[in-house]
Amino acid sequence: MTTSQTARIANIGVAERRKRLVFGITALGAGVVIAALLIYIRASLVWRLPLFFLFFAAALGVFQSRDKT
Image (cartoon, rainbow, N blue to C red; front, top):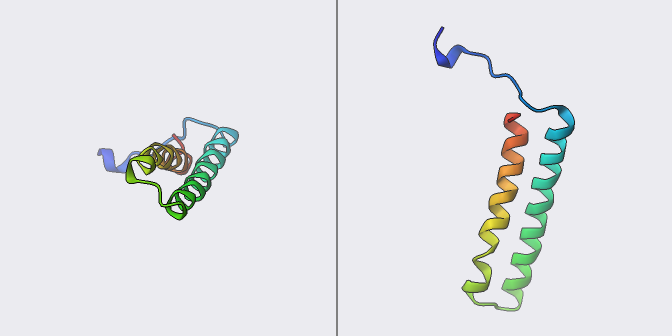
């Protein structure tokens, strides 16, 4: 059996997947709101740079929930 044919087994339960999904969606929403606010007040790009970490955390939460890892 090749590695492409092996079945993937979830290593987290439904509750933990839901927590990660909720965290990811919440972080994404917060990032969008903060980004819109910073754009509205015309903050410099240096002030917008830390939003990368917020969007990265949001993506991690959503993708981990989706991949069940």
